[in-house]
Length: 277
Image: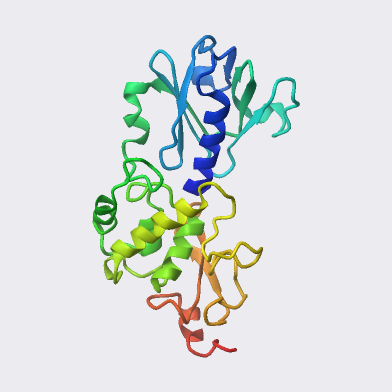
């Protein structure tokens, strides 16, 4: 699932292409809205909310989409060939005189009244990249269930909206705890929340989810995607595993030396003897 900064960039691209423009045609290729008539309505804005993409239209309508794992929006100029995938994968088309936005493999395509948007996004916690960001509320929500593993609490969009698996793993590293540490055991949850905000802010206009400050390929992350490679801080080999139950389980990465706390038995056995220079 894309991180919040990726969705932010998608929204910015869609807003630049569509905002202020009249829809010359629109095609929602989902059964619930296949007959919706949107042509002639002006696009007011595309304003991301966490990982959600509300596109607000004149007349009090909102097109709510979500990318999840495989969804994608592409923007094409007049007469440009659509290359984002085969036609059968297209779920939404929004066309104006100056370009066309095409949504591929979108698992969520929902047309609703703008006044009803809260039905789709009202459950979300403070948006890390939103104008209404509230760190105090984010910490309160994060600690509401102190016995929950940190990585699960970070990934729960009801706590903080915008964190995906890359940032959840990286935040566990910078906090110095394993992903299975109970969130109530975090030494400084306020600092972790602020670090999350800093990471997404730093990356909202660039790809890569860079957390180390080093933009070189292979050096952009502390632990994510580095299984078997040396930790950039202590050179202990990074360990990987799975968290959660299928089919919702996710890959996790951690350094068994730099990150303290609960871990699978195999990782605990390796702690302290895998470090080297």
